Length: 271
Image (cartoon, rainbow, N blue to C red; front, top):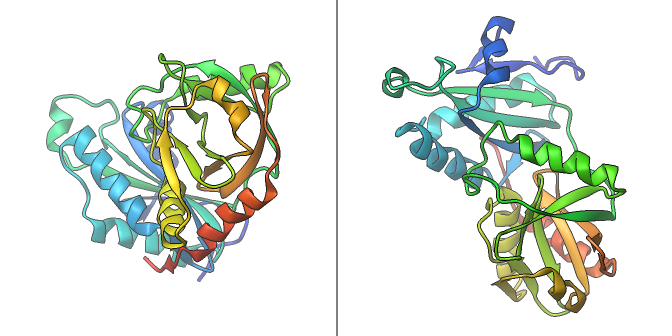
């Protein structure tokens, strides 16, 4: 039986989580996660989410929950919840603080449910901040810098912030991947960053649609050569970006439509 649409239960290792179990997680800094959108009780890019959780678990804990176990936890949360919802799957040490002793213990899995989200409508204007996320290839918790720079951007009149690495190249945004359009090809930043699951879905479907794609270093001054820009994450395959720092970019609606077309082509699975 489905839960009330406004309820947002959480589960640890397949069992309803209690407040006493969740409280320590508010201060836990050694955990990683993936976020997904559930529509009609199905998930797109489930293989990419499982790959992310497996690889990050091996990097953090030296061991990983099996794909079958993770699927069962995700499936249970979907079956007990609304057909449309947001899910966040977090893998963490059940002992809270990660110590040498806890390395011998299987990591635990927290599945949190929430209302479905489509993200902001946009277009967005981004500030440019020199910042490199630590362990950028892993989607981990405790990244205070992302929220700090988001707040700084809003105070300066922007909607969000994009990050520039030590070489002066754009990498990603606070909770987004960046993507650009030169009129013929989709251009992805070549930099150390998180390979988003939405990014992975869009990339493989653009390849199937035979749309040219390239990975290239993108300094700020190169923005004047682009005729479109967007951000994407688990919420959406594309929200238009019309400015990064002082550089304005045209709102290329055909480009945004192309990103959404690629996402629509991605099949959805039942866990």
